[in-house]
Length: 102
Image (cartoon, rainbow, N blue to C red; front, side, top):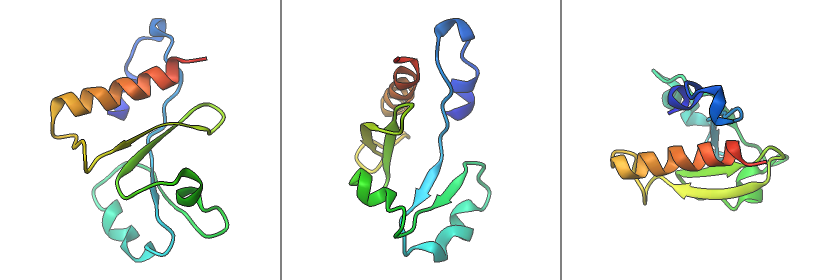
């Protein structure tokens, strides 16, 4: 999805989009496994930052942030698996819309 969004023409006015994962604090032991064979950047939350808590995130949530890092949408991949083309398109369009908004 990152490559699709990056390939959109500049004329659409889509700003930069960065897709990355953030692991829940306390689950660091799985980091090496989740990163195998993947290219998505993977960050580790910690108690001092507590991104998951600040976002009120649940497992497999995609938290969409605006340019000032405010939550503007949450999309859960357990509920809306990306294997369904409609769900994939919805999330892609959500990210594009967020990056196109002032």
